Length: 281
Image 1 (cartoon, rainbow, N blue to C red):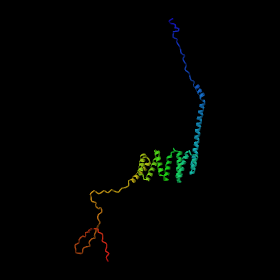
Image 2: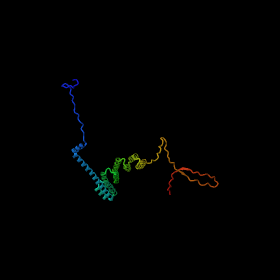
Image 3: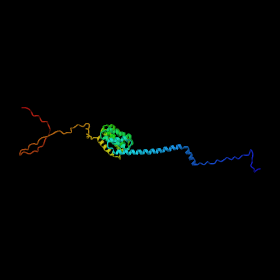
Image 4: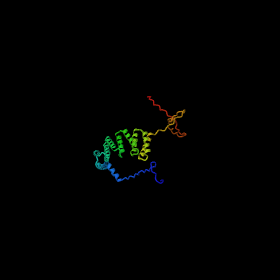
């Protein structure tokens, strides 16, 4: 039985392993399972999203109406009291920012410089990134100058120039510093600031004014000096530079007829003091 398959204990057995079939995924079934498992969380997120959209839209509508109402009141406001009412009712609107500036200007015209600065300070606290923030600071410094507080005004101008280098008001603040230093007689410090303006802001109109101020400062710093007189050489005798006083005698009377004429020559003699007339009787 050579061709027959050997069977027995010692014969190797052939073991066949079962082959697992690939599992197929049904997308619809997976979606249903996911929804069934997380349906509550999904519903909450959708509700929050809808509420957020509605809230943002409602807030924008509220802001637009508020801005429109404030703008209407601002166009009708002509007095400081009206500006104050607008600020109190709509303090967070663009119209209120303009009302702050106009109120400060009205207070400055009335001579209320301290109140004007207080109004401008509130404006800066409420709208620190406003496009006219540096202009408000310049107005505060000008009010301080008017009140005679030169040191505080100078410090404000320094703050404007250092914190807003590329801004329009920076060279103007430097020019104002030059004027203050010029009034105090600090010519050297004023000259350095003029040179800074001409270097950093050469394309601005402030550079032209700085050059004019610099010429004025140089003329003030170098007054005209009298011509120097050379000292005498050592060993040389000191001589008088003023000639002695000469006395010219009157011309001689004409000669009688027949006498030879002789040209009268004036004789020069040193001037002598005339003797006083005698007081003898």
